[in-house]
Every structure is written in C-alpha cells, then in structure tokens.
Amino acid sequence: MTADVALEDLFADTSIAALVTLKRDGRPQISNISYRYDRSARVFVVSITDGRAKTANMRRDPRVSLHVNGSSGWNYAVAEGRAELTEVARDPDDATADELVEYYRSLRGEHPDWAEYRQVMVNDNRLVLRVHVERFYGLTR
Image 1: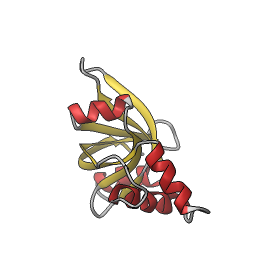
Image 2: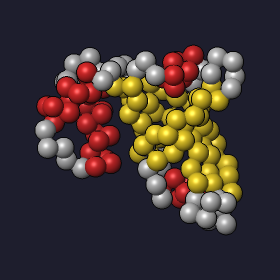
Image 3: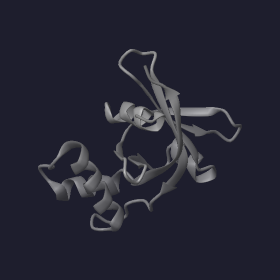
C-alpha cells in the first residue's frame, strides 16, 4: 500500500475533518466540517455558508488543508489543496441547489422533503466547496 493510499484511508474512516483556511494575517482559521471524498478525482466536497470567515478566507486565498485523526490518536492525515467555490444557491432549482442535494444524498440518503431542503439551502446562502487535493501527508501506523 502506498503512503497516499494509507493516508486517504484515514479520510475514508470518517466524514468529519478540520478545515484550515488562512486569515488575512496568515494565521490559520480552523473549522470542523462534514465532507464527501471522491477518491478517483481526489476531490473533497463540502457544504458551506456564504458570509462565514472560512468562505471569505478561501475567496481571498484558495490554499486549504483538511486534517483527520486516526483511531489511535497518534496517526493522522492532512490533505493540502486548492479551494473551488460554486455560486451561492439563489434559487431552489439552480445548479448549486442540485449539487447540494447530491451532497446530502451521498452522506445521508433521501431527505423527507426535497423542496423544503432546497429552500433552506437558498435561505442559508449555501454553496459547495470542492477541495482539489495536491498532496497528502501524515503518519499511519
């Protein structure tokens, strides 16, 4: 097993990671997020809200990292990459709302009321973050 595969496996064990973005002064801003990881494309997909610090940080500087801990607490993986942000969902039937539906389905399955979900995504000013992985590092045991 290659190092990248072992590190990617740590991301497969959970769907929660710490997302690190860079503040204007260069210090890290860290948020816990839920994600879906597409191994074949090496892309993380995350639902985020417009107007939050992490979103503003990524618009200014697209360099991001995601961090997960392994079960022992001593093993960990970091994915470094570039952020790509969609448009904010402005209409329940726009492309961003469609992608947010697919994101939800991939993590939780079917929603009891898709029309309500889509409207909430618009009301919450949701958008999709895609992190294109450039490199993994970490420690596996």
